[in-house]
Structure formats: C-alpha cells, structure tokens
Length: 102
Image 1 (cartoon, helix red, strand yellow):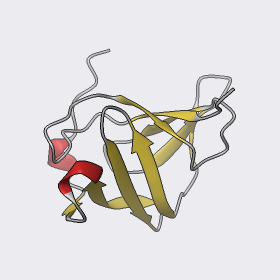
Image 2 (cartoon, helix red, strand yellow):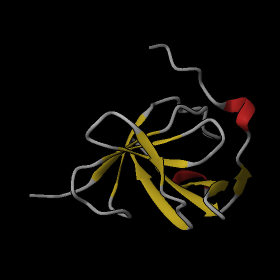
Image 3 (cartoon, rainbow, N blue to C red):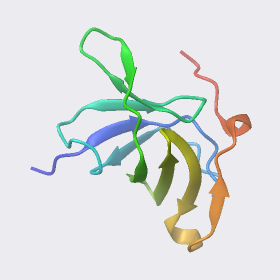
Image 4 (spheres, helix red, strand yellow):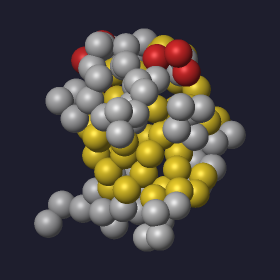
C-alpha cells in the first residue's frame, strides 16, 4: 500500500490550478492531514481538531494532476515551482489564497 499524507492548499497556483487537496510523501507518510495557511505556514491537524504549526523548512512536493515543489524558509512558503512549466519559480503571494468556503 502506498502511504502518503494529505495537504490542503487553497491557492491559485501559477498554472491556474485551483485544486485544494494534494498528496505528499515528504512528511511522515502516516496518512495525516495538513493545511497550508493563508500566511504560508504548514499546519498539522491534530486528533482533537486543533492545528499546530510544524515550522517546516525545506522542499515539499505536492501531487495532483500536475506536481508542485513548494520551498519553505523559516517555516513559510517562499517559492512555488510547477513540474510542467520547467524550473521557473513564482513567489508565494497571500493575495492568491482562495477563501475557505466552509
């Protein structure tokens, strides 16, 4: 069985993608749920419904119909790359966050 974690990222990505649920194998791969906040912070959903900031640093790959590399510095997303668009980087822009409809 292929193990991964789920990351919710409500963001208008540089390729126009607006999907919100992505898979990653760059965390614990224990079928946990994470969310990237509107400030670009990676939060882990806890069993009691709270979220904690895990202060992630480094590169994370998110997969859906395309793949994305997110680069975190000091716990915040700084750059986004889209697999199909080559190695161009776009800065994280909070204005591109999609409001939660829930």
